[in-house]
Amino acid sequence: MDGGACSPGCGFGRTCCGNVCVNTENDPTNCGACGVTCSDPSPYCGGTCQPIPCGLDGGSCGGGGFCCGTSCCNTGQLCCDPQGPVSRAPQCYTPTVGAPTCPQGCAPQCASDRNLKRDITPADERAVLETVAALPLSTWRYVNEPSDVRHLGPMAQDFRAAFNLGDSDRTYNAIDAHGVSLASIKALYQLVQEQNARLSRLEEENSKLRATCPQVPASPR
Image 1 (cartoon, rainbow, N blue to C red):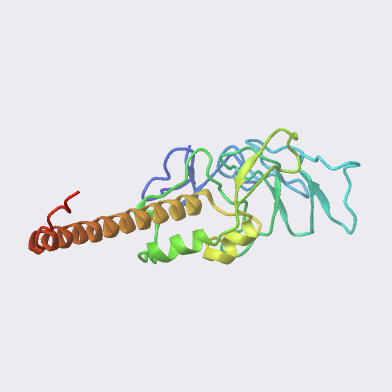
Image 2: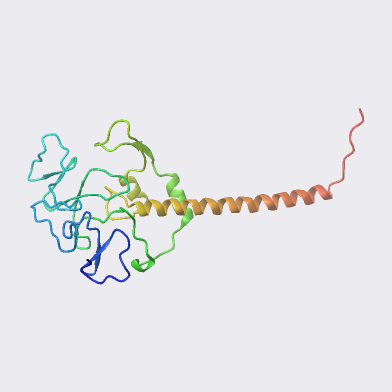
């Protein structure tokens, strides 16, 4: 049962806890249900409170750190299930005042209700397209995936540097990638429309010129 009254509703895959929409599948302060806190010194929520998955050889980290998937987290960080559209290893996350627990991710859906947003500013779609044109893209695989798996996309550091979206240069939100793609598509559509209009004008001018030019008789053979 929801622990608060969120308005508007949180939507599919999110739960209202204390008037805040949370993802109980990866939130160690509301794990599985509102108010269920994972109290382990290094709390981890994977739908329920459980030991942190560790994929490191030896399973230990120096300097007081702790193993999180295939990485070592520092003291004060959280090990978070990224809850992305592609399942991957847990990741280290540094809590902030504004975001004190694990990011909700985009599983099963990214919240995009207008009523959940503020500081809405129209995008410069042409500028987004030009930035995408210069964005390095690569194929790659995550370090914990088999060698026959490949993905395509930018590095989070390059995406952050190019668009200054999100709050980290280690990850980028799928909803930002969607927005960049849609903005680029719109900009390309506008370019096509402009080119079509220009071609129509040139064809009309050419037709008028041909109509005013005298017909040159064919040369006798």
